Structure formats: structure tokens, C-alpha cells
Image (cartoon, rainbow, N blue to C red; front, side):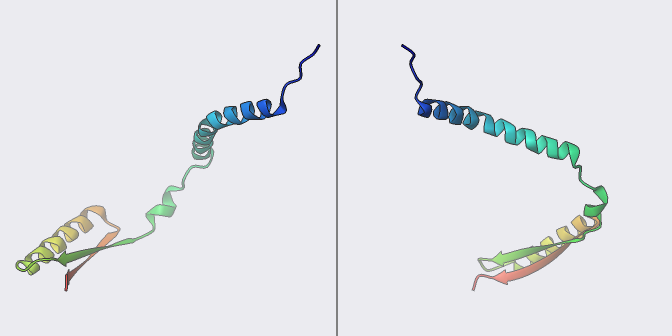
Length: 94
């Protein structure tokens, strides 16, 4: 007498195989996309960025010196990076 397999067992096995293979398929798809669709170098280089730096003082003393230090560091970073500008703002906790 021939035994018939339960169709639920086949579906469970297929789901288990797909569950294990799916991460590898996704990683392969990402690598294929990077390989076949490279980024254009000129598109990113033309954009200018502004980084806002907030100095929030939570205690008394030295408020101006910390802001001055951050502004000086921002100017130095602007010279080194070129198209990135830094905007330093000082706030108090009150």
C-alpha cells in the first residue's frame, strides 16, 4: 500500500528552506545592486552641508569660552573639509 505525504509537511519544509535562504538572497541582491548600479561621484560632490552645533550650558561659569572653543574648532574643520559649514549656537538650560 502506498503512503501519501501530508501536504502540510511539504509546505513546512519549503518555508524552513526559504527562511534559511532569505538572508543570503537579500545580501546577494544588495551586492548585485552595488555592482550593476554604481553611484555617480559628481552628484554628491556638488552638495553643500550645514552642521548645526548646539552648546547647551547646564552650569555657571565659562559659557563664552566653551562657545569660542567650539567656534574655533568649527572654523578649523571647515578649512579641512571644504564644503561643510558649521553653525555654533549657545543655549542655556533655563
